[in-house]
Length: 410
Image 1 (tube, rainbow, N blue to C red):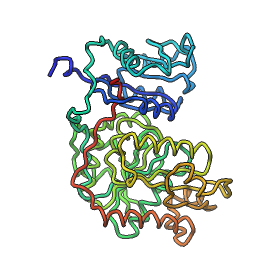
Image 2: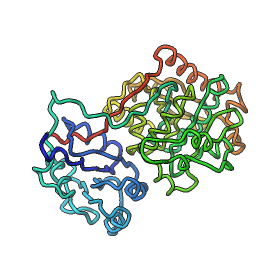
Image 3: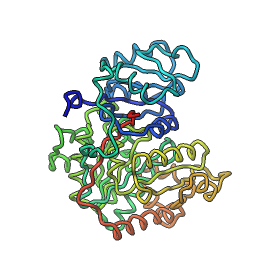
Image 4: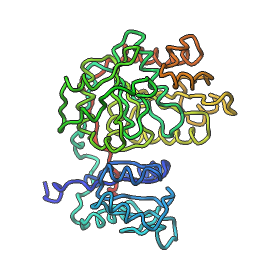
């Protein structure tokens, strides 16, 4: 192998609206060994926090994300001193809206973008590894999160405020009521609400307690860190402070989920709305992805973009189920209209529940307080779906995920 191919990949974080992230991925034709996307940031508010967390070699920032201020580069330098800023601008725009290390047009060819990233990272064009060819051997798997016994269920949404965490809490509780051994992990590592939703705020430990070195986890420490809900769900809470989420690495998370899979029937993961390395790894290895959308037009748009993104990641359609959650009493669109717009079937629609706020305030899920209500009955459809999938396709002993890399090959 040539010497330059042994160099580590350039770690790139992409900060852009969801559609642009997907378009960037779709426009590429080959995976490149020299550029690795370590995070995808779709909110302007999250750019600085996620850059501090990820510490990428290069931040690829779209001007369409709406990050303002002449001090952007200075702020990023203070948070991530070794990160270079490359700004993508509109056609014909001469300069970036913020000071940057490099500026490039949105519609620049993939090869030019790859070259600019390499230059910003201090690599010359001949330092970069050559593009992968169709006959090349696949990348060595970067993650081996195993579902050795448990079925891993990720509850995800590309947009906040659609009731994703409420769905996760109620689903885990409903599964436990059926007699299943259920672990619930709050992966919103900065602002997780599972402790509030299940009235577990007083539990002294959370996921950062278990964060260790590399791909190891002390089973006894993990057991002690987990809270238990009134209905028997074992819960690994999010950190009590946002900065503590930085302690949980992708390797830590891999070890935690692997250990939980040995002792439970289901591991339910409540994910954040943004995408980064840890969440992408989990999505790639999950047995089930429950995509939650409300009936709002922006939520439906984000659901469509997320479905395209999951497809581009190579995630099979049969691992994804679409849930519609009515967050208000009346909606102008029907379930059928949304299914046609998304070109994806709706597993079930969760009806609006007037007592939802009361349930949240009391820390008791609706499947407990209103077991005969419409919300609980519709959630039963999801429970039955998971049971059928479990019976028809037992969890594999291991499932390998590959790193998601931008295809800057051609």
